[in-house]
Length: 182
Image (cartoon, rainbow, N blue to C red; front, side, top):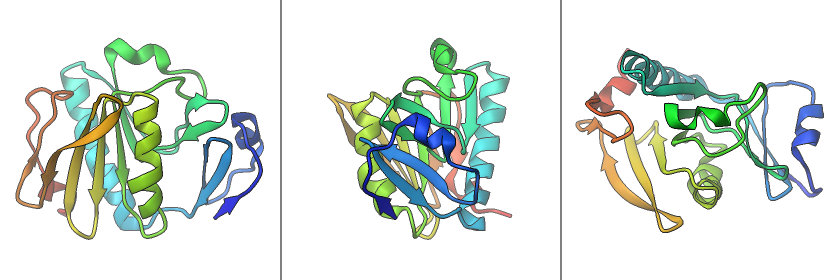
C-alpha cells in the first residue's frame, strides 16, 4: 500500500509499532505486511550462518530486520538481513544505520516481490551498497548482484544444488539447500 504524502525518518519514528514494515523511498511511505514463516525461517537460517562465520573470523556485524538504514531523511529502507564489515562499523548508530552496509539481503514475499526486485535494488545501488542478494523462497534460488558503475550486475544465479560464496566472507561455502533444510 502506498500513501501519497512526503514522509521523513522523523515521521517513521512516530508510527506506533505494529505487525507491518514501514519504509520510505524519496518521501513515499511504503507499508508491507509482516513476513510469512518460510520467509522468516530463511532469514534466520542465513543470518545465523553468516553471523557465526563473521564472528569466528572477526569480519564485521550481521543484522536482521527490523533495522533502518537512513540513507537520507526521505529514503529509509529495512532489508531482511545485512552485513557491515569492520571497516564500515562507523555507520552503526544507536537507533539506525547512517550509510550503506557492505551487503543487503532481501527474501521475496508475495507482498514484497516487486519492491524487492525493482524498487529497493535501485535505491541500494544509488546509495552505494556493494553487494545485494535476492532469495526466492519458492524457487529455492539465490541471486547475487554486485555494484558496477552505479548499477547492479548479476554475478551469480544459484539454485538448490549450488553453494553460496562471496568475497565478503572469504572461505565461506554455504550450500543453498541449507537455507531450506529442517
